[in-house]
Image 1 (tube, rainbow, N blue to C red):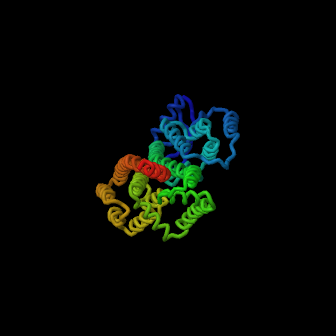
Image 2: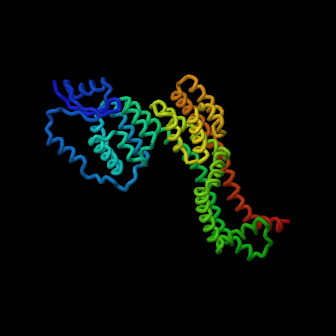
Image 3: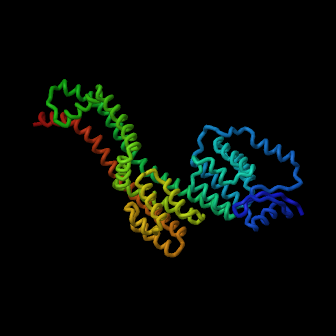
Length: 415
């Protein structure tokens, strides 16, 4: 029998000791049977000098506070691999060292190495992740805390991965839905601007030489062309840029205007419904995961507020939190807030009555994810013909306006 020295987390506390086993796999199995989360597991007879040298070699080449930013995709890949290795029973320190060596980004390597060193120094895993709020939000950290306390870190890491994947799916779907109309709109504007600045002047010179009377649409187009080619073009450009920054400043600094604008965003045809469904899906997912993790309701609602920067959403959740503090039921509080649809409140009511709020919130998340997917598909099928018509009107209108004098002359000569 071999003797192994272990360090780990049991019932939320760090423990260490020795265990006898035939090999490292059996030692790991025995410790997992005791519901211990292994952070380190080594043979006691291992040469100390060898261990120190290896650790030193692995940590070389890392600048702790690197300025490169870790991408969301890198956090997701790290979380997936971390969850898989922990579930397989690998010690956490060994897992972090392996991930540090496997992942390519220098920025994520630095973060992992710092977490590994902190854990090696006796700082809890959740506290180490908490040092990087820009990468690991409150949901991430609280689910790790729950995993440490329950001895089921692998289960809660999988919940983290699920949460991250769903957030990314929603973001990508929104970007994908907006990309096509964005490209079409930009193309229409660029082509129209090019025609007004480069093509229309050619027609204007030709018609001036012919000395013919111009139809009103053609005259308007030529006036627009002259305006854009003169000082008016630069004035318009600076006005648009200045107006954008002024709008951003006002909707950020003035709370009344900000609230009205954010409320209007949620009322936009098609887009508003899409945004609201994605927000409700994310709130439900967070509330479900945190509730399952044993996080108290008030803290769960506070964390859920970070889902959206829309002040209408955050204010509604703040009102719910205050109501919970006063002793009201979630169902009653959500019904008071017009932001949340009646279906949402009814499903929450079932969870409260059955005492399975975490499962019901997860069911609500799935329901609104499905609704969100349907809304995205509907929007895509609706926007495509609208944008084609828009481009046709913009570019086709310009072409008709510029050629109409020629058609008129031809009609007169034919008559």
